[in-house]
Amino acid sequence: MRRRPAVLVLNDGTQFEGYAAGFLPDEGITMGEFVFNTALSGYQEVITDPSYAGQVIAFTYPHIGNYGVTPLDDEASHPWCRGIVTRELSEVSSNWRSAGSLEDFLIARRIPAITGIDTRRFTRHLRAHGALPGAFGHAPPNAVSEAARIAKGTDGTDLVATVSTKEIVTYGEGELHVVAFDYGIKTTMVAQLADRFRVTVVPSSTSALDVAALAPDGVFLSNGPGDPAALSENVAVIGDLVGSLPIFGICLGHQLLATALGATTFKLPFGHHGSNHPVHDLATGRIEITAQNHNYAVTPDTLSRGTVSHINLNDGVIEGIAARDERCFSVQYHPEAGPGPHDARYLFDRFEGLLRTGILESK
Image (cartoon, rainbow, N blue to C red):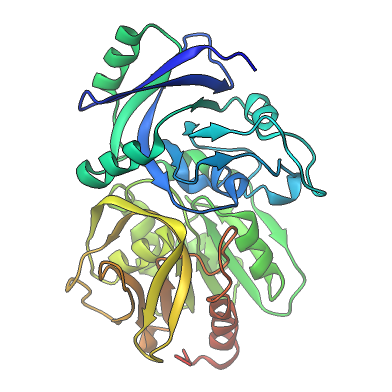
């Protein structure tokens, strides 16, 4: 396939040359915050994860798209990321599940891409300098450079209101009823909950009074994009619910619950984005290999209520908290996986146990 030359420019002035792929916007420029993901497979699940809203995803694995795409792997109704960066975008897809090529998927969903990038050099740069805003595209290089200069990151931005559902939707038929806040909830997350409960997914703006009116047995706080420090209204709602209902949070939901319990959050240099992060469960001593996707984390020694339950073995980042007296717990990583290992899916069973007994087990 003959492709148009393109350029990628970070706002520190670093440039990379490649070729335009996927959807080609008329203006020829795409802006966003650039992060890298180290997963070896699961590119469709990564691209459709709403937690990437406002960001451009660079895949460290060099060959992307070789097994095609299928609607069964979508984690949302459509992608929220700004674009993707690859070393090589496969023009051939071969898999019995494939319903089409990744490039056709990107074009249909209006997601720009740039391929032919030296993603090893690109990743090393982000590891050294942190996640950076920038721009890429097939517009003249000086225009892309100017766009990169004014590009913004995710700091201080409420991206949850953009990705959250606007309607209340119910899934599953379990005897226990869970209200799930949609901060950017993934399809696999809903599926894991619906296997165990009747789940009512509500908009992120839902009030504590509206939750109480639904008469749930418990509350779930989903993953989502952006800076938790920009979501004070959501934190206030969670604060009103803590102690009155059992709560389980994942990723952004973990950060918001921790904030409601007195903690603060900070931005990691380049975040955790991948499917092989080792996490230590402090209560059991077990080591789990986990899927992760977050740029922000809970600040150590700021949690005034509850305890730290899990830590990341790579860098010591807090990966879980628990407040047993107030019947709530959360993890920074993704036990539903999609993509990634299933080591931590037992946490959904732990939530069910909490709802049935009122006791938060650590086993």
